[in-house]
Length: 108
Image (cartoon, rainbow, N blue to C red; front, side):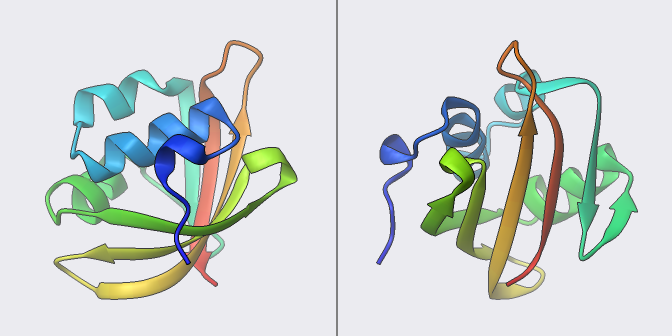
């Protein structure tokens, strides 16, 4: 079962999923706090390089299956042109201003 992005609990996470799925790089970057960081499978990555490779140049798409921690943690079927589809877990740190300062992803 998939949760429609509009029904996700956390506004920042909802906007993140919408930006990924609509391939809105500018909107995606606007969601991030200055100096935002991320990790993939437990290793910190260069955020700009990673999002270009894993999301925007490879047509990334998230189908969220469930959420926890008030919507700040989601499990999703993630697909892109490079890797196909895989089950992934995403965890978000959202600042008081509503912007994402860190996200961590990896296979679920």
